[in-house]
Amino acid sequence: MKKIVCIVALVLVHFGYSQELSKVLLDEDYVIDFIGVDYSEVKLFGTSEDFRNAQNIRDEYFTIWNKFFYNEPAKFNMAEALRKKKVNYMIEVVELVNSSADTGNMIVSTKPEPFSLEKIQEMVRRYRFEPGSEVAMVIIVNNLNKMDTEAIADVVFFNTNSGTILYNEKMMGDPAGFGFRNYWVNSIYDIMEKLRKKQYKKWKKQFN
Image (spheres, rainbow, N blue to C red):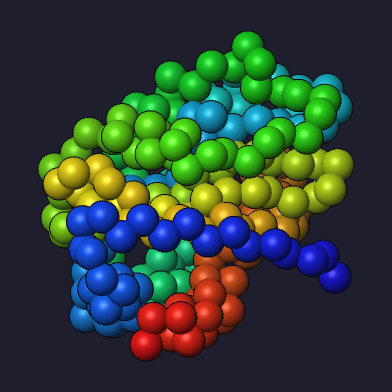
């Protein structure tokens, strides 16, 4: 059983009070925009056999993995993961940043450093879309780590008017399944399951 170290970064700039953040995270009627999984700065930690072609992974798999939210909505149900009645799916938002990811240094042989809060804020401000809610959520993947069989990502909630981060949680997802596509997309599913089963309970203790 892997030990998971979750680092919580709270930036209460726009909302000001934890009571308001509690509404975003815990109110089942509070609708948010889910804009998908951002792989634009991901590092692929493994051998050339584990990750054979960074450009192909960018051009094919980044899109395929995000399309699971549309193609398999029963399993990849973000509303259920966040215990909400509804979320607005806007997966297309991350497509532009994902398609422009630099593949030159994407495959690495040393374990990547986690994103700083400043780096995540910089990434969030690149998103361009017409929001349906005052708050959006994105999963920003830091690395796919074949050596330790894990994916590391930041689950980020931000204000759609200002782009300001409201809440950030670093999480680990276990990959599983046969084939490259299924193996790594299931790390995102595992993060969703941890949001639903563990993180929500943590939020209730922290913000209720």
